[in-house]
Structures are given as C-alpha cells and as structure tokens.
Image (cartoon, rainbow over all chains, first blue to last red):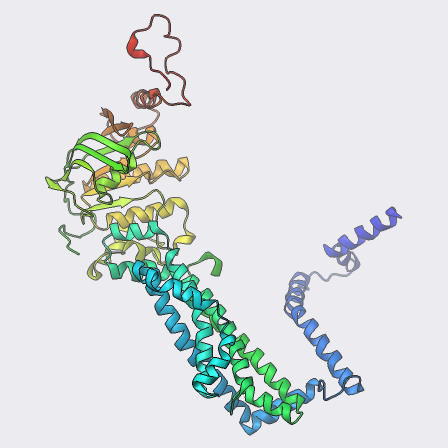
Length: 294
Length: 276
C-alpha cells in the first residue's frame, strides 16, 4: 500500500515540478514555445480568479434555486431580478438620489464627530492639563453605546436630519479621539528630544515629529470610525427617514419588494467597501515611508 | 532661533569651543550620578570619555548638551554658563533618531532655515550619501543611518559636537569606516568633539585625550599622542589601548576578580583592591 502511494506521490511531485510535461514533448522540437511564460501567466490568472470562485458559485446556486422555484421570490428574489431592480432604480435616478443623501449624511456626521474627536484628541494628547480636565469625562461617556441614545435623541431632535447627524457624530467621535490621543502619547520621546536639540520650535516639533508620529494611529481610528459610521447610518435611517437608502429599503419592505430591499443592502455593502478602500489609499499615501506600506 | 554662527556647511573654519567643567555634580533625587567632575577641553580638541555602563558618562554628555541641569558646580562653554540647549552644539545619539516619515535630505535639513536647505545635499555628499537624498530612512542600513545623522549634525556647522555612543550598534567593519569619516570631518571642520563610548579602541583611534569616568568622577586623563591617521595594528596603539583597558577593568566590580592575582604574595599595598 505504501509503495503505491509513494509512486503516486512521486508522480504528483514530478507533475508539480513540470518534469512530466517535459517528457511528452521531448520528441518534437517545441523549444520555441514559451512554456515557462505561459505557465506563469496561467498561474497569475488563476491567482486572480480564485477569490471570485466561491461568490460566483453561491450566486449561481442562488440563481438556479430561484429559477427552479426552490426558494420563494418573496424570501429571496433571483440575483438577476435584483440586478433588474437596481437597473430600474438607477435609470429613474431614484438610486442616485438616495445614495447621495445617505452618503451626505454619513460624511457630514463623520466630519463633525471625527473632526471634534481629532481636535480633542490632539488637545488632550498634547497638553497635560487638558487631559486631566477632559479625558475622564470622555472615557465615561464613551461607555454609552451610541444606539442607546436613540430614545433621548428622538426626544431632543425629533426624527429629523439633526437626530441622524447627532447619532453618527457621537459614534465616530470616540475611535478617532482615542486613537489620536494614544498616537500622540506613543510618539518616540527620543525623536522629540532630538528635535529639541536640533533647534525646532514648539510648532516645528508638532509639525515635523508629533503629528506625523501619531498619524498611523489616527488613521486606524478613522478606519474604525468609517465602519461604525455605516452601521449607525443604517439604524438611524431605518428608524425614520424621508429619503436615503434606509428609506428606500423600508419603503420597499412595505410593498413587499424584496428585490429592492436587497438592492439597498448591497448599496450599503458597496459604500462600506468604498470607504475602506479610500481609507486604505490614505494610509498608503501618508504612510508611504513605512516599510509595511511599501 | 538665532544662528550665532555662519551657516555655510563644512567649509568655513569656525573653530571649536572651549569647555570648562568645574566641580560638576548631578544627582537624581538621592542618587548622585556625577560629583566633583573637573575637565577642561581646549578648542578643537577631540576628547573621548570611557567607562563602564552606569558610570555617569552619558549624564556628563547630556549636561554639556544642556539637556539636563547640573545640581552642583560650573559648566561653561567659551566662558559662558551653559543654560539649556545651544545653537552651536549638536548631538549624535546612539540610535540615529531619523524621522522615518521624512526623506533623507529633509531629515538633514531639519531645523535649518529655509534658505539653507540646499546645504543638506552638500553635507550628504560629504558623508558619501549624495545619491540617497530621496530615500526613506527605513531603506538604509544602520551605518548609512548614522551617516545621515552625522550629516544632520554637521549641516549646522556645530562648534561642539557631542557623540553619545553613536557607533555602538554598528558592526566592526562599518565602525572602522565611520571612525575614518568622523576623524576626517573633525579635521576639516575644526569643531570640538566629545565622544562617549565604551569601546576603548574607538577612543584611542579617535581622541586626543581619553578620559575615564568611574563612580561619577574623572579618574584618568590620558593624552594620546599618536600621529593621525592611526593604525590599529601599530604597537604603540595596542600598548595604549591595553593600558587604558586594563585600567578600566581594574576598577572594583562584583563580576571582576582582583586585577593582579599573581602579585599576591608580599605585593605592595597599592596593587590590591577588594572586590566589594
């Protein structure tokens, strides 16, 4: 038994290393053909396609199941009808309107909450008395989940735009605040001492050493915030909205348009992915000095 | 920022400073790190400070740099008391302390006025890195990083260069190359140099005088009168190195046996020291 498995193994490794292929074309002169290049090209293509294999398989199974009637269209419409629904929404311009409104809310919330987190993080990170004054309060408030504020927020702001903006701002504030604070505190003191001995002013120290040193940590905070931003947006828009992706899906739910609901969910996925790609691009640009990003 | 010295890079002979240290002491709380330290360094002199770890040699350097304030005594540069950081003093640290997010040329230009940024390239060429101006520090080897740090110190035309074990982390070959480079730049620029090191060979190779610090005070001041450039194979060099090294090791220390075992029977009293 072991002999045959050994033979199999040998044959397999021979095939792997290309020895087997080499034997069958030995007779004819095919040395002009760039086998090596072809193999590495095929390998590269396979590497690119492989991650798509499982999603494609799932979508195919889904499509076949829907067409065959194994899954009710009310539960899960066929992928093609989701594409149709998306196409129809895009053509009527409704899709863009809702995406625009949702993205606008998300980004405005990020700008307000993230900006505030950045400024306060820089302040408490850099100035000792600011930390003493503010940090313990902020850490206390941080432990309240943003979503727990919903009843209060509705009482304060109604079900208006302000309520959504407030929720998103509160949620994105903390990751950016904490990471900015720690980024600044973790800047190498040796570098700061060096900067002082080389005649940098306070502002020079900040601009050349402290801020760039904290940047990688701040960007981590930004990526956390981007993730939270979409989650809060979805919840906020589902509670009540007159426009936006959440409104689109909730509206579709009432009319049992499951395909439109799916379009909404996919839109959130795409927007989330886009935000992440954007944050990664920022990291690649701003941290291009870092061996980890080269 | 006031630049008291002219800032053309490495060309003008500006001369070094004179350093006067009298009765200098430094204590951190109850712990006395330096005491009664006396040292005078002439302008343009190259002085190496050796000693075991924790003997206070780095503290002395930080005091001279103005990074720490003495608790006793006087510390004068060119007759003026040292109070804080000085524009004519630059330090090279053991780790290069380059800003990883700035390219090599910008690292060297750090703290230079805008009008002198071109000097960075000239000084980098002097340390043999004229072709790496736009490289990130992370791409450089340890020796190259220290060259950049050296260029960054020299671009300010310091009159006093403080070297805090700058070559401690480098391999032996790179270290010998760096010795030659530092010696050449010192001779060209004429600054006063104060090198802290635990490598006696390095001290003998570079310095006009080797100072030994033990228990927080100067315990040996040895003039090295070897012609430059010095060769390590030289008999006189080796003899001097051995003498200083023996003197460093002779100091009582828990891990060290008494220096002179075979002289035990009937030895003169000064040869014996207790290892406590």
